[in-house]
Amino acid sequence: MMRIIPQSDVERLLPVGDCVEVMAEAMRQTSAGNVTLPIRQFMSVPGAPGKLALMPGTLGEPDCFGIKLVCKYERPHGDPLGTHVGMVLLFDSVKGIPLAMLEGSSLTAVRTSAASALATRELAREDATRLTVFGNGEQAMRHVHAMRAVRPIEHVTIWGRDVSRATDFAADVTLKTGLATKVASSAIEAVAGADIICTTTSAKDPVLPGSALEPGQHINLVGSAIPTTAEVDDEAVSRSRFYVDYREAAMAAAGELLNAIENGAVTQAHIVGEIGEVVAGQVPARRSPSEITMYKSLGVAAQDLAAAHAIWRAAEAQGVGTQVDLLA
Image (cartoon, rainbow, N blue to C red; front, top):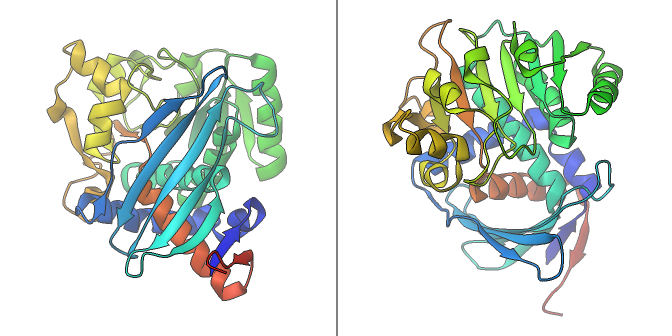
């Protein structure tokens, strides 16, 4: 019997705080090589402003495999469908049978922000309280909640290219969290005094200059996921201790790192390590309060599979979702 799990159950069964530890184990498995992670592939949709992304993979613990299918379509800001619509198909590795089909956009949103929270837990200063978010879309709000799960955030600064949207977003953050917020008029103003910075934009070119970074900051790069786009410049990369989720993916699609390498600012050796290696104690995290740390999030199928399996287990225990017998 396969269980179909809709968006409402995905959101309820795996809150972002719980998902952080799920991501920790997924990234440990990834860095230990207990996964199969083909680089994500894209297929354009003829005559439409969209593409299909395919992310297959296997995970050793829990023992499962599957694929995420995501339709990425350009839509107006605020469209209820968002830019990502898709599903995750989860299979049992021992028997080779389907366990679940889960709504994919909410699962991706939760695991993405939880992965950033994991990196923040491992790399940011313990006393980090001031958060800056670049962007005002779904991941921006997700990251506000995720950062609060791992650090005692007291203040949030927002920067966005559309001041009106940024202002509305800041008001929404205050309404949902009770936190004090501020809308910055420039990227430089936005990062001044910040402890944690999350970039969640759709920018094709850098929006955050490295010259604006201050000692002790931690940055999560989230918005860019293809090699031709970047949210920060070469100086930001070169000034930071640079961590990734998965080296192979980073060398294929981390635009910020690839630009810096191509321009001679750094080499591939600039990657300090994978976040799973930090979690496992194999690679050092922050070495001093003054270091600048940076985490490049691209997302890997191991994260989707681990989140999907955790949700499926909870759904089984609670008897939620819809069971379908495909062989009947």
